[in-house]
Image 1 (cartoon, rainbow, N blue to C red):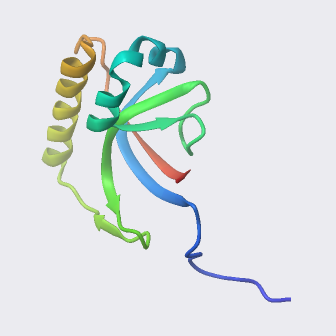
Image 2 (cartoon, rainbow, N blue to C red; image 1 turned 120 degrees about the vertical axis):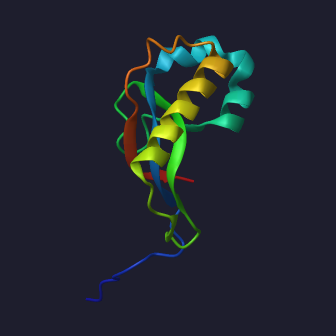
Length: 116
């Protein structure tokens, strides 16, 4: 019997590494009128995606970018660059969702694969 090893090119999934915040799924109900705007400014993950807790959604930024072959195109950041991304993320969440910055704790890094 032959086994396929290596990258499968017709896969319908993609890899992700996202810096973001997890919210309860019912948080979306309050956002119906601005969901298109949210998807324009944030990466949106749901509990069907790897590493996202059941019953949660994640709003954040891609921390690492991957091309169509699964190769990381932006793969390293300094601590200062990550800190700047956290500040930018918090400010965007405040601006677009009117969230209190004091309520936002440290973001989490979520990684895995998701269906395309």
